[in-house]
Structures are given as structure tokens and as C-alpha cells.
Length: 238
Ligand code: UDP
Image 1 (tube, rainbow, N blue to C red):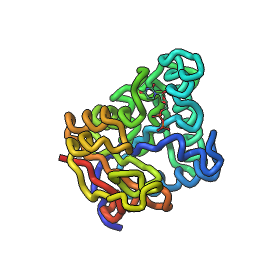
Image 2 (tube, rainbow, N blue to C red):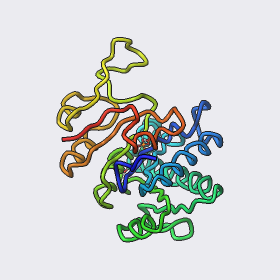
Image 3 (cartoon, helix red, strand yellow):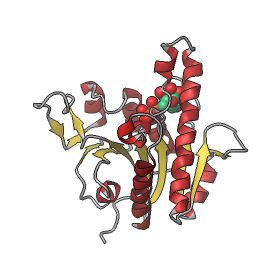
Image 4 (cartoon, rainbow, N blue to C red):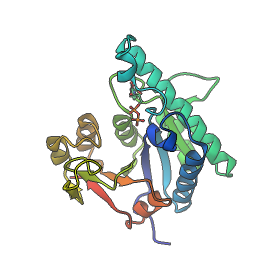
């Protein structure tokens, strides 16, 4: 097995992906498969923290369009991410690998609060660490959270798992002439306005010199392939 490229990474998983083909909630088979991929990646020797989205349950913008204030809608979204973390934690632990959910909110009956020291400790112990609750603030996304947490815990890269194999200049599912990039600078990603991640996330990655690798999680084993430098994805760096 090739030596992994990174010692510690943050994997960003969208909540939407965890819904599988049903489009809402949690699809147990998908959660299980992602757990397998995360465990395989951990077994390569890379320390793995995971920031999970909540779009499979609640998105703040959508709730606020129906009469709830945006900060309240966003709080609901952040709580949804904690539920997703608990589902993944359970799936990982069922397979015999230790995991730990840390939340941006104080919720002692449910899980521990995210602190840098707790994250460092559990990662060093070999646990897969699930980071829930987003940044803890409304108006942000879990993409931005992934970059923020990666910078806080000294991760060497953010692995942004999506349903396409990189950054394109248009939606490849709608536009067959869309061009895929192998590599982009953070500034090019921001200026291009590519939809794959929000500009705040790219800007924070530029500020903290963090590479982001955008790749498709559709194929089992794709996280490990990226860690070995074999996977197909777009590297946003420099
Ligand atoms: N959210 C937030 N602050 C954060 C992260 C997330 O308010 O720091 C809320 C926001 O409402 C968002 C929801 O949580 O719509 C779910 O996160 P996101 O949309 O990033 O999930 P994904 O699209 O990755 O499933």
C-alpha cells in the first residue's frame, strides 16, 4: 500500500449524499458504505476528521423561505448536521473502529463540545472524529466549517466529497461541454464563481494556505484513492 499523501485531513461530506437515492433523511446502506470508506482511509494511516452537512434534513435558507427567521433556520440546519454525525459515528463503531462526535454547541447529554484539544486527542488516539454543528454560527456553510476546522486542527488538506469528479466551469450534469479543471488556485476558484463550494470557504482556504481536493465519492474507496494520489479530482491550492 502506498504511503498516504497526508498525515491528517478533514473530509467534507454533504448531508445530501447521505440521503442516497431517496433524497431526504438517512439511507442506511449509504451511511454504511461511507463508514467503510472512512475506515479504509483511516487504516492507511491518515488521521480523519469529518465535517458533515445537513442538507438531507434541513437547510436554513429553505426553512427561512417558509417564515422562520434565517438564524433560526440555520440553527435547525446545524442541529441536523449533529444527527448525521451520530448516524455515521454509530455506523463506524458498529464496524469496530472507534469514532467520536464533537459538536460546535454545548449539548453534554449528546456529545462533547468541539475544542482543538479534544480533536487533537481523539485523532491521535486513532478515532475517526465527526464534527457536527457547523461553525456554530448562522449564515455559514459546512464547506466553510470544513476549512475552518482543518485550519484549527492542523490538517494538511480538505477532501471535499461531492457527486462530480472535480470542479467544472459549468454543471456537467446539465452542460455536456462543461470543462473540468485538474488544478486551480484559490483565487481562480473564487473569481470563477464555481458552484462546488462557497467563496467564503475558498477565501479561508487561501488565507490559511490549505489545499482543497474536490472529488467524487460515488465510487467505493475514493477517499483512499485520493489519499494515495491515485484518485481523480481537482486540486484547489496556491
Ligand atoms: N449551517 C449554519 N452554519 C454553519 C454550517 C451550517 O448555519 O456554520 C446551517 C445552514 O442552514 C445550512 C445547514 O446548516 O443550510 C446545513 O449545512 P449545509 O447546507 O452546508 O449542508 P450540506 O449542503 O453540505 O448538506
